[in-house]
Length: 302
DNA sequence: ATCCAGGAACTGT
DNA sequence: ACAGTTCATGGA
Image 1: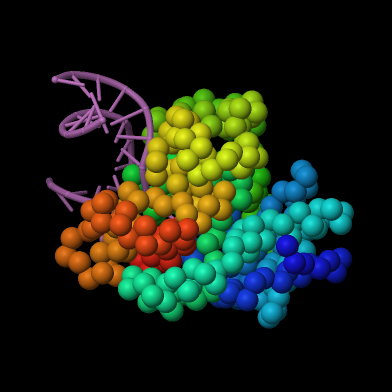
Image 2: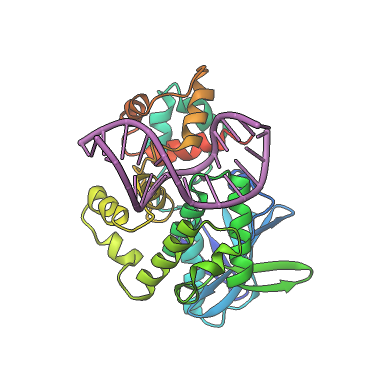
């Protein structure tokens, strides 16, 4: 992580393969998003570090990006954790040079990499948030998924309003672990999704599941198997979480409908490709399937 | 109306 | 092992 501390703000120095405005386009994809705000080319986010709420405003200051603090943090240690959060959020540990090199010789990826150069795979660093968002998104349209997320966060998260803008942090695991299914049913979650999400909150709260314990696993297969063993987590959700939270650039949600639609569009097909055809493409993207998927998703919302 | 949506568990064979 | 069914609701 490459950053510097200036008391009232921190400065982060991303790798060269980065375009802040491309990332903002992704983050602005839903006007129902409640976990960050975008205004005037700046990105606002409220997070909790060591129990302390921190609100920052992120702006592009080439070649760096700068996070100005509007609330908190009190300690140097906390400022470093904010820097680490942003670093992970933008997936700055990933070196995209070999991805772009691969894409230059790939008929599917060449165009999207040209169009969205510098787009980072925006992560969801918190495991509970990543799992919950994936489960909410299962088998429903994205618009409704955002509606459910907004209700979930507004009801159970911590929110504050400053200068007319509302900022929220994702609900604490402990709070969700104590809920009954009907509390989420009232927000129009299905009973199944309510069970899954509460069950996962309980598993994390009881120490049976954590990001650290997943990251300690040996390889892709072991992590995937651990995730799939969780009720409510199938292959798609496991890959989604490995991609967005655990930063496996080879995670590949082959069954994803959005991926199918994007490939159909990029390849000019009349029908969506089969799973087998997509697996073949995936082998050509070995090591970069997650980025390929993310860029293809991006191509769906012009 | 009808079909589909950034699926997964459950049930029956 | 594998295919069919159910869950839930909003968008197009």
